[in-house]
Structure formats: C-alpha cells, structure tokens
Length: 251
Ligand code: PGA
Image (cartoon, rainbow, N blue to C red; front, side, top):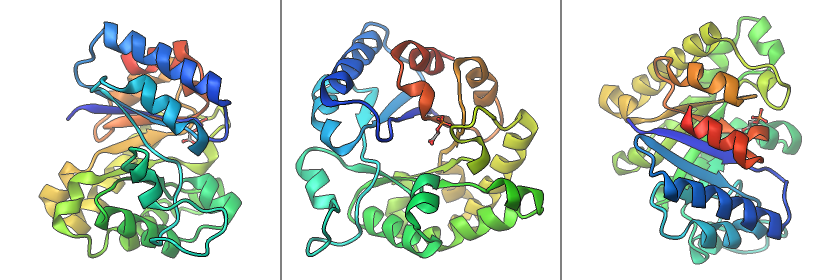
C-alpha cells in the first residue's frame, strides 16, 4: 500500500505564504518523483485555490478541506458545503479531528453523520479518532476507538470504502510534542484494524489506510512508518515548514 503523508495546516498561513509553501513543496516533489508516497495537503478554505494551483499536474499531491457541513445548502451561516468544495476542485475532507470534537463540540453522532454524508456524495474522507489522556489512563482506549469507528462506519455503501481513510491521533499527542511510543502506536493501530475489519469485513478492513498523527517530526517519522498497520502520517505543526515536511515525506 502507498504511504499517505498528510499535512494539516489548521488555521495557519495567509494566502501568499500558503501558495509559496505549496509551490516550493510541489516543485521539490516534481523534481524527485516519489515512489510509494502520496501527499495530501489540508489548507484553510481561503488558501485552497492557491494550493490547488501550485499542485496542478503533480499526481502525487492532492488537496483537501479541513471541514464542511453535512447539508446540501441552506441557512447554515458560516458553514461550507460539499458542493462549494467540489465547485473549486476539492473532493476530500477531514472529519472528526480532535480539535473539532474538543474545541467545537462535534459529537460522535455528528462526526458519523458528516462521514456518511461526504462518502455518499463521492468524497474521500479522512476520519480522525483518538483517546484523551484521561481515557487512556482509565483503560478505555479500545472502547473509545470502538465508539468512534462504530457509528461512522456502520452501513457504509460498499463502493465508498475505497474512499475512506482513518487517522489515529491520540489527543494527548496532538501539538504537545509528546509522540506516542512505538508500542502504543502498534497496539492502537492493531486495535483500529481489527475494529474496522469487524465492521467492514476482512477485505474492507484491510483496504482502509490507517494513519498515525500527533507530534510527528522528521526524527520519529521513519520509525512510525515501519510499524505494522501504519499506512501513513497526519502531520500538523511539522508540515508548516517545507524542509521538515519534506524530511517526513522522504522518511
Ligand atoms: P501535530 O498535529 O502534528 O501538530 O501534533 C497533528 C494533527 O492535529 O493532525
């Protein structure tokens, strides 16, 4: 399976800087075609057109949106629809990122609704899951991962499974500099693989890429990518700088 290296730029970078970062990144990747790596960039909404323009024609790079609202259109002030994203050339989205869950109150039910809504409309979805430190310390890891996968993955149309990616991101490792250790990542990814396979069947479960996210840096990327069931990385802070992100891509 190709490794997916995804950049979540969150609410960072103004247009010019985002376009320039994407141009330099894509320039480097075009000069050095990657075998076995696929890069996805999730910029903020206003930066998407510039990042799309910079990555046009580079087949190893694609662009997604960090958020959307699960309705066709209507009175949802401040929200973005999938049709609006498709209109500017975007057909992949994040759902369930821990910042959406914890800062903006997105529930498991809402994340499930968003995941199904986007998959049913032909989008690719990167579904983020992960436990808080309190949940881990209470021995709730598998229960949390089970709860966070069961609802979104229930009753998915078979033809949408190839567009689903799961990102395991322990909340305590996001933006904190604390990366989960190899044993913790190995255990969590094995649990996610078995939970996903239980819902989607063995073939379906095997086909879903599972990414790790949370304080990924150039010096831990290679070891993470070597672990069983780690099919890629979702990178926040370290993806903002071209050199560190390139090192992670090449890890
Ligand atoms: P981080 O963020 O790499 O800065 O920890 C990861 C994420 O939020 O996806």
